[in-house]
Amino acid sequence: MILGIDSGSRTVAAAEHLLHSVVETLGLPTGVTGCTHFVRTGALPHVACSLTVDADADLRLLPDGVSASLGGIRTGPDAEGAALASAEHAAGRSGRIVLFPGRDRLSGTLTVGEILARSAIDAVVVLAQAHEPDADTAVVTNDHVRPEWRDGLRTLVTMPAAGGRLTPAEVPDPTPCCADHP
Image (tube, rainbow, N blue to C red; front, top):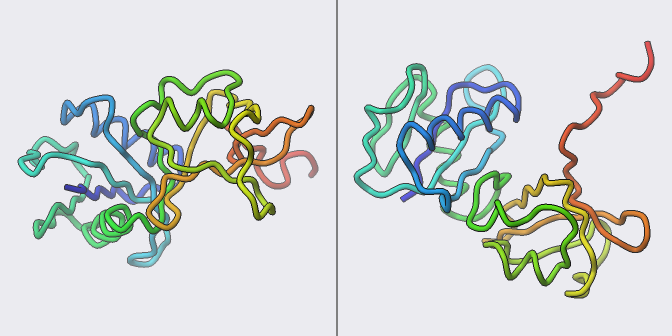
Protein backbone atom coordinates (compact mmCIF):
# COMPACT_ATOMS: atom_id res chain seq x y z
CA MET A 1 0.00 0.00 0.00
CA ILE A 2 1.00 3.62 -0.41
CA LEU A 3 1.02 5.86 2.66
CA GLY A 4 0.71 9.57 1.96
CA ILE A 5 2.16 11.91 4.59
CA ASP A 6 2.07 15.68 4.79
CA SER A 7 3.26 18.20 7.34
CA GLY A 8 3.07 21.24 5.06
CA SER A 9 6.80 21.14 4.19
CA ARG A 10 7.79 24.30 2.34
CA THR A 11 11.03 22.86 0.89
CA VAL A 12 12.14 19.61 -0.69
CA ALA A 13 14.83 19.29 2.01
CA ALA A 14 12.21 19.53 4.77
CA ALA A 15 10.06 16.93 3.01
CA GLU A 16 13.03 14.57 2.62
CA HIS A 17 13.75 14.98 6.34
CA LEU A 18 10.11 14.07 7.10
CA LEU A 19 10.37 11.03 4.83
CA HIS A 20 13.49 9.71 6.58
CA SER A 21 11.96 10.42 9.99
CA VAL A 22 8.78 8.48 9.21
CA VAL A 23 10.75 5.55 7.77
CA GLU A 24 12.74 5.38 11.00
CA THR A 25 9.68 5.84 13.25
CA LEU A 26 7.71 3.11 11.48
CA GLY A 27 10.76 0.81 11.32
CA LEU A 28 10.48 0.37 7.55
CA PRO A 29 13.11 -1.64 5.65
CA THR A 30 15.85 0.01 3.58
CA GLY A 31 14.25 -1.13 0.30
CA VAL A 32 11.15 0.99 0.81
CA THR A 33 10.15 3.42 -1.94
CA GLY A 34 9.60 6.99 -0.75
CA CYS A 35 8.81 10.06 -2.81
CA THR A 36 8.26 13.78 -2.55
CA HIS A 37 5.40 15.44 -4.41
CA PHE A 38 4.59 19.08 -5.06
CA VAL A 39 0.96 19.58 -4.07
CA ARG A 40 -1.41 22.52 -3.94
CA THR A 41 -3.92 22.19 -1.14
CA GLY A 42 -5.18 24.95 1.08
CA ALA A 43 -3.70 28.39 0.59
CA LEU A 44 -0.08 27.48 -0.23
CA PRO A 45 1.67 24.96 -2.46
CA HIS A 46 4.02 22.68 -0.54
CA VAL A 47 5.76 19.30 -0.62
CA ALA A 48 4.03 16.14 0.58
CA CYS A 49 5.47 12.60 0.66
CA SER A 50 4.52 9.01 -0.08
CA LEU A 51 5.90 5.67 1.12
CA THR A 52 5.30 2.02 0.37
CA VAL A 53 4.12 0.29 3.57
CA ASP A 54 2.34 -2.84 4.70
CA ALA A 55 -1.44 -2.57 5.05
CA ASP A 56 -1.13 -2.86 8.84
CA ALA A 57 1.13 0.22 9.24
CA ASP A 58 0.32 1.86 12.57
CA LEU A 59 -0.50 5.51 11.81
CA ARG A 60 -0.54 6.27 15.54
CA LEU A 61 3.28 6.09 15.44
CA LEU A 62 3.58 9.05 13.08
CA PRO A 63 5.24 12.14 14.57
CA ASP A 64 3.01 14.94 15.85
CA GLY A 65 1.84 17.31 13.15
CA VAL A 66 2.00 14.72 10.35
CA SER A 67 -1.21 14.15 8.41
CA ALA A 68 -1.70 10.83 6.67
CA SER A 69 -3.69 8.97 4.05
CA LEU A 70 -3.65 5.17 3.82
CA GLY A 71 -6.35 3.40 1.88
CA GLY A 72 -9.62 4.95 3.06
CA ILE A 73 -8.13 6.33 6.28
CA ARG A 74 -7.28 10.05 6.45
CA THR A 75 -5.93 11.81 9.53
CA GLY A 76 -4.87 15.37 10.25
CA PRO A 77 -5.41 18.78 8.71
CA ASP A 78 -3.17 18.12 5.67
CA ALA A 79 -4.78 14.76 4.79
CA GLU A 80 -5.80 16.07 1.37
CA GLY A 81 -2.16 16.69 0.43
CA ALA A 82 -1.23 13.25 1.80
CA ALA A 83 -3.97 11.65 -0.31
CA LEU A 84 -2.76 13.46 -3.45
CA ALA A 85 0.82 12.26 -2.86
CA SER A 86 -0.38 8.69 -2.29
CA ALA A 87 -2.47 8.70 -5.49
CA GLU A 88 0.37 10.09 -7.63
CA HIS A 89 2.80 7.48 -6.28
CA ALA A 90 0.33 4.63 -6.74
CA ALA A 91 -0.29 5.63 -10.35
CA GLY A 92 3.43 6.20 -11.07
CA ARG A 93 2.46 9.59 -12.53
CA SER A 94 4.69 11.98 -10.63
CA GLY A 95 7.05 12.37 -7.72
CA ARG A 96 10.76 12.59 -6.95
CA ILE A 97 11.87 9.17 -5.78
CA VAL A 98 14.14 9.71 -2.78
CA LEU A 99 14.18 6.19 -1.33
CA PHE A 100 14.23 3.08 -3.51
CA PRO A 101 15.79 -0.38 -3.61
CA GLY A 102 19.48 -0.19 -4.52
CA ARG A 103 19.84 3.53 -3.76
CA ASP A 104 22.80 2.83 -1.46
CA ARG A 105 24.70 1.15 -4.34
CA LEU A 106 24.65 4.20 -6.61
CA SER A 107 27.71 6.20 -5.65
CA GLY A 108 30.70 7.36 -7.62
CA THR A 109 30.84 6.93 -11.38
CA LEU A 110 28.78 4.07 -12.80
CA THR A 111 27.62 3.07 -16.24
CA VAL A 112 23.97 3.34 -17.24
CA GLY A 113 23.89 -0.47 -17.29
CA GLU A 114 25.24 -0.67 -13.73
CA ILE A 115 22.64 1.81 -12.48
CA LEU A 116 19.84 -0.25 -14.02
CA ALA A 117 21.27 -3.55 -12.72
CA ARG A 118 22.03 -2.35 -9.16
CA SER A 119 18.79 -0.53 -8.42
CA ALA A 120 15.05 -0.32 -8.98
CA ILE A 121 15.55 2.42 -11.59
CA ASP A 122 13.79 1.34 -14.79
CA ALA A 123 15.16 3.87 -17.29
CA VAL A 124 17.83 6.53 -17.76
CA VAL A 125 17.14 9.46 -20.09
CA VAL A 126 19.12 12.52 -21.13
CA LEU A 127 17.53 15.98 -21.15
CA ALA A 128 16.61 17.17 -24.66
CA GLN A 129 17.56 13.87 -26.31
CA ALA A 130 15.05 11.55 -27.96
CA HIS A 131 17.07 8.36 -27.46
CA GLU A 132 18.23 6.63 -24.29
CA PRO A 133 21.98 6.57 -23.60
CA ASP A 134 24.02 3.45 -24.29
CA ALA A 135 24.42 1.01 -21.40
CA ASP A 136 28.18 1.68 -21.24
CA THR A 137 27.81 5.48 -20.90
CA ALA A 138 29.39 6.70 -17.66
CA VAL A 139 27.23 8.58 -15.15
CA VAL A 140 28.91 10.70 -12.45
CA THR A 141 26.33 10.30 -9.66
CA ASN A 142 27.69 12.91 -7.24
CA ASP A 143 26.23 10.50 -4.66
CA HIS A 144 22.83 12.14 -5.29
CA VAL A 145 20.48 10.06 -7.42
CA ARG A 146 16.81 11.12 -7.49
CA PRO A 147 14.79 9.41 -10.21
CA GLU A 148 11.20 10.47 -10.86
CA TRP A 149 8.02 8.69 -11.83
CA ARG A 150 7.40 8.93 -15.59
CA ASP A 151 4.65 6.84 -17.14
CA GLY A 152 4.88 4.29 -14.32
CA LEU A 153 8.66 3.92 -14.62
CA ARG A 154 11.34 5.03 -12.16
CA THR A 155 13.27 7.27 -14.54
CA LEU A 156 16.63 8.91 -13.84
CA VAL A 157 16.88 12.17 -15.77
CA THR A 158 20.48 13.06 -16.61
CA MET A 159 22.32 15.79 -18.48
CA PRO A 160 25.61 15.86 -20.36
CA ALA A 161 28.78 16.28 -18.31
CA ALA A 162 32.46 16.72 -19.20
CA GLY A 163 34.23 14.00 -21.12
CA GLY A 164 31.14 12.50 -22.78
CA ARG A 165 29.76 11.42 -19.43
CA LEU A 166 26.39 12.12 -17.86
CA THR A 167 25.32 13.37 -14.43
CA PRO A 168 21.90 13.42 -12.75
CA ALA A 169 19.94 16.53 -13.74
CA GLU A 170 19.14 17.22 -10.08
CA VAL A 171 22.23 18.48 -8.30
CA PRO A 172 22.80 17.87 -4.56
CA ASP A 173 23.03 21.49 -3.39
CA PRO A 174 21.67 23.86 -6.01
CA THR A 175 22.68 27.50 -5.81
CA PRO A 176 19.59 29.58 -5.02
CA CYS A 177 18.53 32.07 -7.66
CA CYS A 178 20.27 35.42 -7.27
CA ALA A 179 22.79 34.06 -4.75
CA ASP A 180 25.74 35.31 -6.78
CA HIS A 181 24.67 38.96 -7.13
CA PRO A 182 23.00 41.65 -4.99
